Amino acid sequence: MNLGPNLTCVGSLATLLRRRVPHSHDAAPELGHFTRLGLLTVPATLGLSTMAPWGALRLIGA
Image (cartoon, rainbow, N blue to C red; front, side, top):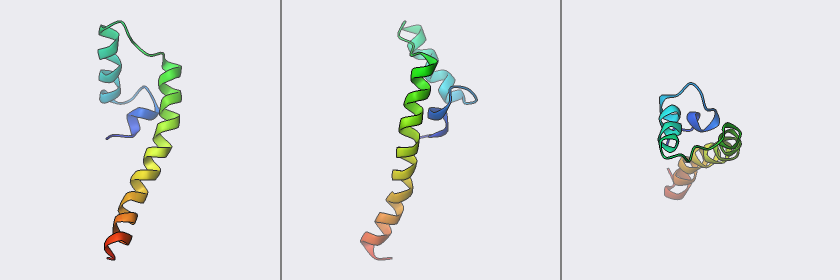
């Protein structure tokens, strides 16, 4: 998963493609909704992805 495109709507090909597909089906999310969702999910995902290797190392004792 790529976290960067989830935070902002510009600057990433993946984000532009992600917004283009719903647009073609007349179900495009608003920019504000997209940004709020990114602001909620990016910090949580970043924290979990940072803690996962640490937890795995603690579990196997390395």
